[in-house]
Length: 385
Image (cartoon, rainbow, N blue to C red):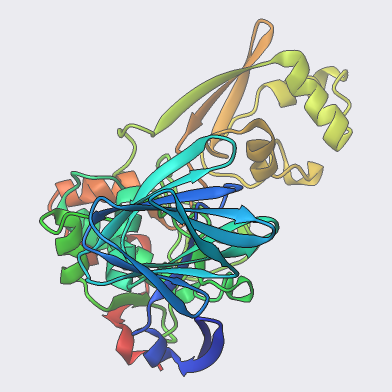
């Protein structure tokens, strides 16, 4: 198995075992159109390079401003213009360095703190920022972004295993664009680095060092997860039309009394009926059909609304009405249709709130993994061929 890695503009091929030792390249602020960025050094020191030339050292509490000018990247330091370049690199001088990054369009849009190195260039008329980061610090940042702080260390071990497996399996997702993954949820949320080494997150990353989840063929699994399954997980073919043997639908009793287990929403009856008339040509004025549309029951997970013969995937309804899940029933309530739903997310794979409850009941991380991904194995990633 081969992976592509970009390293300062050169293309190299590595076996998968060597790739595991390489830094990841993550596009950060990937949903933002950036015209200017401010780097403020919060800890340690950084060396700044323009194209292939060393420019300056950025010490603690010092800042540089980088902005687009005539299709070049221009650097200002202490209100002095340093020059314009095609590419700029911000390289950490020590592993404990961290830097605050503020991005701007016409105003400040976002501010985050990251570790690692940074590569900047212009892409589609805006600044592109790549964070070059080792797997350990990447996973710590993902934990803060996906899970948050103050979770049990055993749960962090669960999520670290899932996230490491997911990152390695999807290393090529954005490789044609010059990076491995982005910072958005379809790759894994990565909105900041973990700057504290004395917490459960860092301990969990160390405790599960190099461990990944594989299927019966020793391949990295699709380690999908979601917030809450509402008491029943979903098979992948209900969401993405793909069957995966270790991702079966089953009753999950651990999440049914948690924060996101239930939800309700009201939609105007006329809007609800018009949707099915417009998109699926249902005869909504027919009394029998109207009753079925307004009074749908889902005691267990279904794939289609009303009946498969009408060809209305519940996943499409969820998307079009921005519902928390596809696991809902509905009934008439005066001028509204009342939806009572369960769960939050696509429902495939691990249920995060269910896993948290399992840990509270003294299940170990390996037991949680086996519960949500039956038939899989936890191994050291170096054992993958």
